[in-house]
Image (cartoon, rainbow, N blue to C red):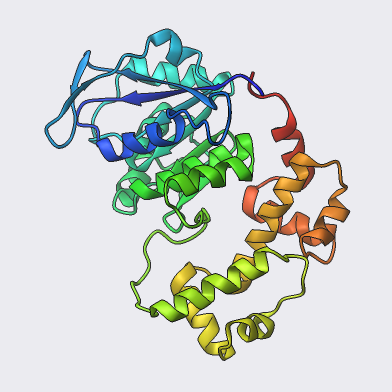
Length: 323
């Protein structure tokens, strides 16, 4: 078991306690049911005074040291109250220096404002809550803001949309660092049925598809996950759901936020990432084992979802990035 990964959160006055709570829930709690040793060493550093007034009328004190922040392997920015305020130069310097060291960044909601202000997002894709997108696009024209995603990974930076999307992004990071089993165990502790994909839309129309239809679609998804190597098309998936093809596609989209085949390709890529990290199988063998017709198809979907090839992913996440 490697040493706990050092995670530091940057907080400020009027911080949203929910977004900060997401970071502490995922990265600060001991989880003996998941691992005998702590997964993370978590600290919190504040700018602007020892005691901070948070949203909702509570006051708290951050006890993390500057040394802990400067030695962190992951820096989380759980929101920033005013996206038009001036970021302290000390904060921007620390962000820039950490980026040069290859630190992993995670921003939740308006926290992207801090990263964009430092310049480390220039030329990279990013996202944030949909209501901030237009203002930040004008303020930071060199950042490629995407308002159609829950979270975006660009090299060593993960940015997420509104509050709960930060939870999805946090679990995505855990999955990269410790694998799907531990990430899923944490999700179960959080009483989350299933992780959401980063490319799902932030805002979708709320449609009541009925409890029975939701149960059936969930069963279909579970059945397919248990046998990803099987051959599936819309017709086969609709038969599993005992629905017409048109009804199945409509109800699947209403529930999942993406079309069935796109969901299937994503699940196959996620299964491939696990095999890349825990086995020495070739990309060709992995492709067939998760249901793709060949390595080229896996490479295509892998590049589309992660921006790198399967081999690059294996090299990136099997190297000892952390102690």
